[in-house]
Image 1 (cartoon, rainbow, N blue to C red):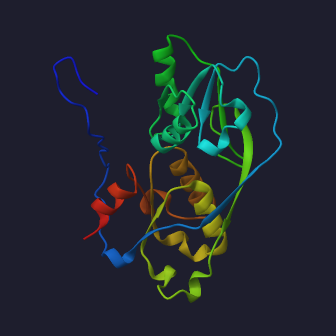
Image 2 (image 1 turned 30 degrees about the vertical axis):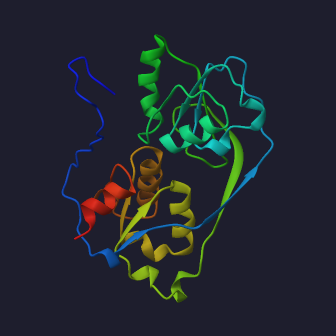
Length: 219
């Protein structure tokens, strides 16, 4: 973007409330697993819906690619994927979570009746939700992997559902240091840690994205 004074806006900063933990590269782990997504039967989008908040490109059914209301995405990658399908995307919360939809309401000049399209079991915030697909993960047997997964000290999670799937299989990871982006992923991880007795305030750090995490945490 460009301000009225001619300043180019091409930077996204996140001010940490406490110093980032520091680890060697071998102690950092950006968690990944094979993910399976399957379309499921779902209710129709209510007629009074004025805007769709789309968590992932896969959440928008093919028969709604011509949706005429507002379309907002959770992140820029989802925006790009939808645009490639011919969907006109009006904006994005850029990973900051659905609470940022209030800013979109301001741009619209009035409160918007939003509907969030996500997966079954997705985070239930304050926005009405419609699940259009289900997700499952193929979690490897990391105990016998050449690189010992459980010997890592700081884990970055791109998804709250991935975090829960891995922690359900490897509960010993709960006391490790965890990191993620802002938004619903943070809320899911924080709630899980609190429910399971983990030290959420001590062991959870929030970064802009995985690159920011690695930049700030790697020695």
